[in-house]
Length: 270
Image 1: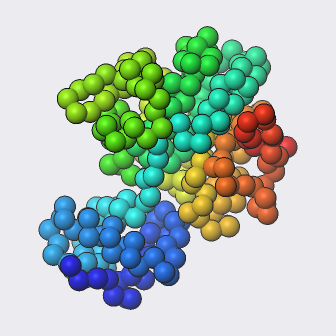
Image 2 (image 1 turned 30 degrees about the vertical axis):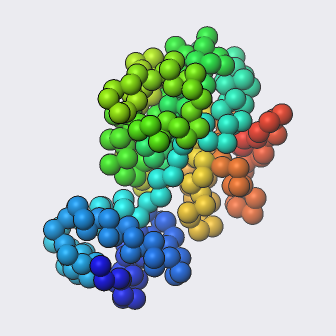
């Protein structure tokens, strides 16, 4: 298939940044070509040029949404990095639970296909089962397609082989043909919805914990700062923020302090 020319590439870069604030670097043309080629296979277009031409005409309001969703990175796995989930359940949640008797709300922002949200639910059952009845986990993502997959809670053999211990597979999943489906005891803790991180967050309730892991790396400094400030307003007093292992609030105009634990760390409003 014919590649993408410079003008079309700039059109896509501008669209993606405008709608999602995701930065596509100038040297990532190969990525855009690959993602749009996959999108074309599921559309009426024959070439990338035809697709971008239709974007410019703005006749199909769903096309920009599909293009932006195609550009998002949905890399995820069960128990990714491991220790944050143990820290959450052994230290953070018991401490928060002692401060109030309300529901303990956890938000997985940019949750992709749901593995992180279900991992938290499994970790709760394993490490602090006495709190399970108080836990509410919300996973959100920009992409309707990945939110639908997360809601379905059905994963391939390849997906469950990425990070999920065998004993948890048999304990929390039921085999359905060639797939594995989460059990009701996980589903009852987790819900999913669409949310654009640079959009309106007014529908969100106040959260005890936010998982914003491996997300900020896709944004520039200004957008990172904006998102972290909004997260600080959503967090309840004393609430905790988990970022990816390589992510930090350093050199950003925010009020977070880093809290070191034995095996991990999190952030809290100072």
